[in-house]
Amino acid sequence: MSTAATTTLEKIRLGISSCLLGENVRFDGGHKKDQYITKTLAQFFEWVPVCPEMEIGLGAPRESLHLIGRPEAPRLVTTKTGRDYTDTMLAYARAKVAQLENLGLHGYLLKKDSPTCGMERVKVYDDNHVPTKTGVGLFARALLERMTILPVEEEGRLSDPRLRENFIVRVFCHFRWQQLQQQPLRVSALVRFHAQHKYLLMAHSPKYLTALGRLVAGAKSLPPKELLARYTELFFAALRRPASPKKHTNVLQHLTSYLKKQLDERDKQELHATINDYHAGLLPLIVPLTLLRHYVRKFDITYLQDQIYLNPHPKELMLLNHV
Image 1 (cartoon, helix red, strand yellow):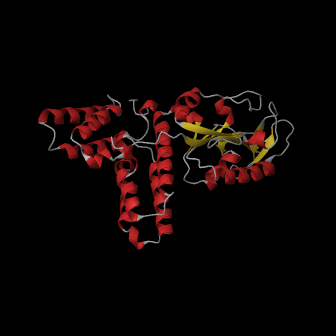
Image 2 (image 1 turned 180 degrees about the horizontal axis):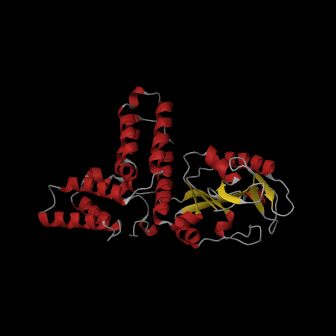
Image 3 (image 1 turned 60 degrees about the vertical axis):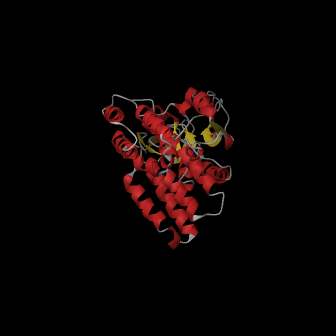
C-alpha cells in the first residue's frame, strides 16, 4: 500500500489515568493495570500518565472520594469525613488540561467510574445518599470541555470491539490531522487529506462526508481560519459515530466498483460473496478488506492505494478481526 495510507513508526502520545499503567495511586494503595493497554497498545503509543487525586496532594492509600449534589455541577467530597476537594480539583483540572494541550496528545484513556476521571455514568449521590449513574468526573469534564476534538475513551469501554476500533481510528486520524496543520494551510493539501479519508468517513457517516465534501469544494471562498475550524469540527464529529456492518458493506461495495474491468467473473463472485458473508456476520471485516487490498496492489489502482480506509491502523492491533 502507499505510504500515504500507512501510519508513522513514531509512537503516538496519549494521556492516561496512571492506575491503568500499574502505578499504585488508587485510594486503596493499589492499581488497575490493564494488560491490553500496557502490552498491546504500548507497542504504538507513548503514555503521559496523570492521577488528579495524587497531583492535588492526596496520598495512597487515602480516604475515598465520591460526587454529591447535582450531576451537572457535583461536589467532590471524601466518603467518611465529608472533606470537600471540589474547588481544589477544579483549579487543578483547569491548569493541568492547559498544560496537556501543549504536549501534543492525540488521545486520552480514562479510568471508568472514577469521581475524577470517569467519562460517563459516574455515581452521583443525592441528599438522601442515593446514587445515580449520571455524573462525569471533575478532571474528565475539564478535559472534554477544553480539548473538544481529542479522542477520549474509558478503559472499560475498550472491551467493546466496535468502540475500541472507533477510538483507535480517531487517534490515528487526530495524529494525521495535526501533522497536516504543522505546515501553512494549502487548499491542495486539504483536498488530498479529504480524498484519502473519503471512504473511512463514509463508513462512519455518509451525512458528514457529504457536508465535508461541500466544504472542501468551496474551500477557496472561505478564510483559512474559518475553513480549518469548520473542517475540524465536522471531521471529528463524523468519526465519533462508530462504523457499522451496514455502512462498511456500503463502502466495500463502492470499492469493488473500481475493479469491474480488472476482475473476471469468478473473482467478482468471490469478492461479492465475501462481502455478503461479512454483512451477514459470518466473516470479520479483515477478510473482504484483505481481498480488496490484494486486488488494489495487483492492479495498481492508485486512488485506492491512498485510501486510509484500507489501512486505518497497524495490523498488529487486530481491530478488524472480530465478527
